[in-house]
Length: 347
Figure (cartoon, rainbow, N blue to C red):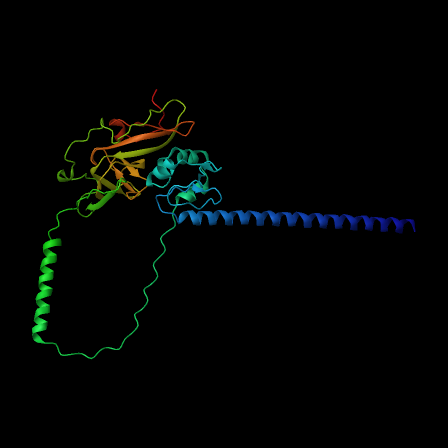
């Protein structure tokens, strides 16, 4: 009897332990499912935010939002506008909203640059990416209609139509057949634009050759004259390097297109009607030359080469502790040498 009583006590204890283990496992599994559901909800919310921001025009900063809606903005000045570059919404002045936040050059804003440096996450990369253009829907097939009865054409009418066709062809040849180049018309807006035309293809000229004498700029490049109407402060010790930037003055420039191996595959001509700036990255070509490849804007992927491209300048842009922007121009010798290290402020 005593042995059987001990056995029953052990069975009861084992059953209680198994029940507690089952309950704790159920609670642990439920907690994991709740955490997974919460993470999925946050991810869906982030994706929805990126989708809304991607619908904005190219000239609107992705960090611009409203106080009660991160992804919304108002075209123009509004007291509800906030800057989310640092996470917490920050009020914006009317001048900041009109001159920076809703202009194509918002990428040079110190707040934008500081936000990218402080929070270099995949979310910011998603903000800078634009969705691929959606393919246009196929045209609706025309509704068949009953063919009208043909009428007999008068010979005089047919002869008149033939004369009109011949005259139109001759006029088109006179206007289009003698086209000798592309002219850049100055824009009435303050924002500089660029016109790119194809100059040569690999089948027309060797890949390693520069532009022909007729394509050279009319005046020799002069690196001592900065291509900017307003100089920036000089970097100081402790400033952080942000990126390289090309600056060009109004005029024409020759740009180069390189393949993955660094061979020149195309040469193009770009015309600017105002001062223009864009981020660039240095890369070495197969011919040993240094090419400054554009990273943003309509000329993305095309490169500048000194001195064949014309009178362009390259500067290293830095950001101080307060988010202020500073820069220093590279010398003529530095334009033809691939940088071996991250630039530092000059002593």
